[in-house]
Length: 338
Ligand code: P6P
Image 1 (tube, rainbow, N blue to C red):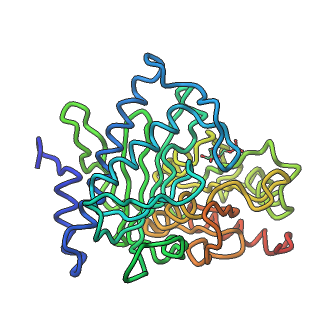
Image 2: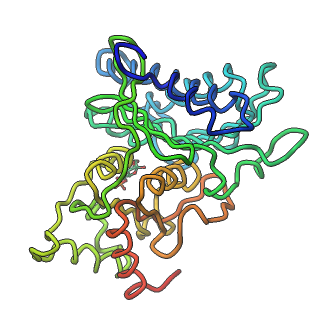
Image 3: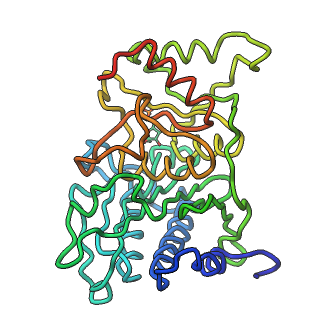
């Protein structure tokens, strides 16, 4: 215990017993991610003072402009995972193809990491919370070089998932399937310290997060649900509050603590939704389900989807159990399943 609190490193080692077969590899992998998060946090916190804001002048496979911080974060996490030696493949939003980690220390690496190094990065120029989202799988292939097949696993196969939110404070929130725990970075000692043990999302919430600028392009079921949120009804504390900050990590983190629902449905510009299954929806779904919430496409559980492509997008309804179920009810009643 450092100054009376439990650090991330101590917690990980303490929980290692949850994995009878693990010999510390997953613990070391989570440590590596924590180290990279601290390095990225340092750059974000002084962004504006150094030439790290703004655009790279390049685009990623998503066709999205890459921010300097996007590329910086991507390189930091890849470097940490490479030197840590526990990861054999990194699948990142910022790279078209999977990255094979072929360093001498990674010869026997068993883990796959899918990562969005800096989600919501368009917010960095305007000082709004951004985040890193990660998902960890064990490779399925037993010999030879791991491949894309090892990456395209259902969300139910995740061994761990988490996010870092670079906000008014910097937090790392993760699960290994035994509940959700949150750690706040104490800059005075450079350690993530346990601040939110066994996080649970309220079954009911009174906030909804969706980009209503796309309203005219939403499926009818989403339009009906938004109208449901806006109707005056004292018994169910409606109208709900609309909160959408343009950063999935920021919106979902708030909803995890206070209750709420985040929705990114299909739109005309995003016929499959905008958020990526492997490194945004699956890890967030694992975390929210472990905290007692729900995550679906409006029709099916996110974690049950069989991935077919690396940067596959899916619609996402995620948050408080009763709110997601109400939205699913509206989708079933009013929207044809595509
Ligand atoms: P829109 C950020 O680019 C992101 O992936 C999520 O973090 C965020 O919730 C969403 O896209 C914002 O998208 O289309 O509403 O600007």
